[in-house]
Image (cartoon, rainbow, N blue to C red; front, side):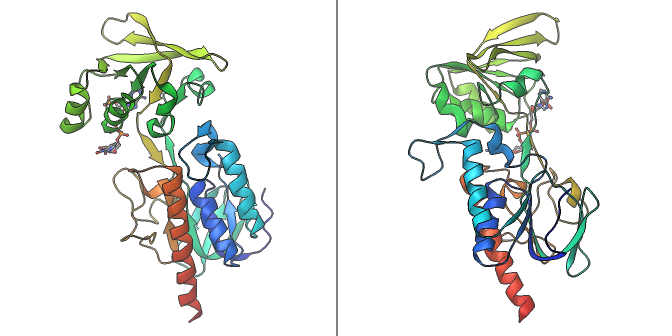
Length: 317
Ligand code: NAP
């Protein structure tokens, strides 16, 4: 149960990935004493990856969880009040200041709310899929493709993400097998064609992944795949598997509060982080299904902090 230091804040932040923590660093340095609710997965998606090699400033790479720990410490240094595992359950957006409810019943008021609750990769739900996440199983080709140079791998899914990831991964892998549960792909024609034209991409249709075989020590060795038409079960030897069956933005508690697109991503206005509700800003993956990188989320968190600061100035005019 989070013990809040105050009953009113100038800045409250929902989410603790690179977007939320960067917003906390910036608003903390502006002496706004932000409060951060970390959510059920403190640190967000980076805490389920291993090496991060594409974040500028780390020539030897950095482990995802360590990166988050350092960023959190940086936010705390500038006065951010951080509550692990605390979840926002309701936002009253038609009162000023905004009233926020936490899932344990605590309520407080805030002048601004920066929503940085991210998106979660949809998973197949297999036990080993979670166990081997970061050890051969990944949900981000841009992040982890490099580790599979010269290897054979699989991509699960039949949408644009799966096509994009499969095509991208052929830069590293010698063979990429797209495993899709139906006969037809969901992906747009142009993305399908790009994958079809690539001689390193193969397709397994009507195929359901029953298990990911491997160990943390040895990595992934194969997928157990069932043909949905014949019922036959075979093993596909691969060293890596990219699950690309979509993402789900963590916006459920803001249903009816903020404008969202048809997939539940928050719609922001113009180049900034403004939502349809004055005083509420959205940053990072919760409003971006295109780039989805730690660095773009951090940049977006900085924008949200600056937008919130400017909004607060208008309140004091
Ligand atoms: P998506 O379009 O929802 O496709 C998800 C795919 O995963 C579908 O083929 C689906 O199979 C499969 N799937 C879902 N749940 C599954 C499960 N439990 N087991 C096995 N397979 C499962 O998601 P997305 O590809 O991430 O794309 C999301 C949005 O972003 C789309 O609007 C897309 O156009 C857009 N996007 C665009 C680009 C681009 O233009 N460059 C790139 C990426 C994404 P079924 O087909 O059988 O349902």
